Length: 320
Ligand code: COA
Ligand code: MG
Image (cartoon, rainbow, N blue to C red; front, side):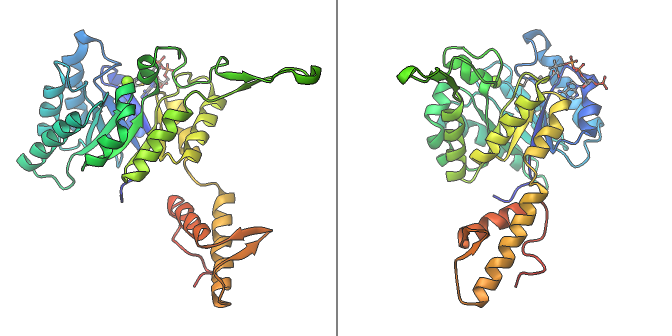
């Protein structure tokens, strides 16, 4: 799907008006004004009003600006979507939390479709969703197979953990108890090897998204003082095929951008692949060796992807 990149998606509670300008001026590609879990029930209506005013009054530059509405079965969701979707020109779309069924997606798509028809926009309101419950995870492929206007799926690690029994106090961090202990055979020292308790869920969401041409977004990492931990989590998501990561604090934005922007080494590799394959092609070969490594058409596609993500024109001076 051709869509604007979203290396970082910044969460901005709609009750924290002092955050708005900072978010607008930041280096994030996208942000959402949150009406859901960073807002107490007593503040829901004030948060909605703040979001409406901010959408009209703040200069959001070229950022993708979303609103995270309340869950569809809550008493607030319908008015969140109707009120903001009908009035706010600058709104790019909604991020809908806790999607757990195909029916909910149908409902959300019908609501956004109606708003887009009632008031046609240059770019129709986008639909972004969160998969963050055991039920949503169990049905993610079915949900995406029937969805027609979902742009991204975020994996919401905090609520997912809650839904799975609630062991994760860190929101997205590692857990020393999710480990295997080497068996100590022949009196060798025993070592605990940490595993990644989020691997199954992250990989499943990424696979479902790529199967149905939707952007997978890696969710929050709560310990914003832990820059190394965030950088490692973001790098892991990128390797799994994610398109970007949430930030819950401005200090995480640059780290997410870095993780999801190809390095100069990757760009050099991609250019070298183009050059080597162009030469191979002139010599009538499809595959060739570069520094002891096989290169074939798949590598060219990987190189194209890296150059596109880096914003470099496809091909290079050496290419045909
Ligand atoms: N968006 C924009 N600006 C933010 C921000 C955010 N999410 N979080 C903090 N800031 C700004 C502050 O206004 C402050 O700006 P200043 O230096 O110009 O005064 C600066 O960044 C440092 O903020 P800090 O004092 O470290 O943060 P805090 O203690 O006030 O708040 C959190 C910490 C975690 C409560 C806050 O970052 C936050 O609410 N994050 C989003 C939470 C959320 O949306 N959760 C739901 C989705 S998981
Ligand atoms: Mg959540």
